[in-house]
Length: 166
Image (cartoon, rainbow, N blue to C red; front, side):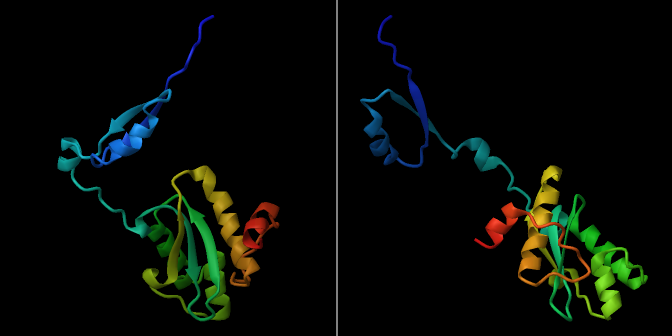
């Protein structure tokens, strides 16, 4: 069998002629260079990407009690703004259906507007990741004594604890 060399390829984004100085370093190797360019006609005429407001996305969120500054963490696979409105409806109708509503109602505490009360902790589109991220944030808030007592932190996860308390 003869000497057999597998050619490898590396991709560089062509941003200026200066990139050739870097790629010349690979001239006498078995690495071939491919250039790609983002400055194409298609990219120039493409309309700008619309920015989705944070509360129109799904993921992990935190609600803060305006009276005691403790937090409630939850996940949703629906828009966060819809979930916020549900919590407020529970409070206004005296229906302790969520731990946050229970906290506000039992303690006669105050809640605020969505922009002041709700914080997006993680935007997550993959529904299988919602529960682990939710549990991580709940355990982190519980560890720092910032979780409302009406929300259970669940079983301690050693992997989360290694990150929370290195």
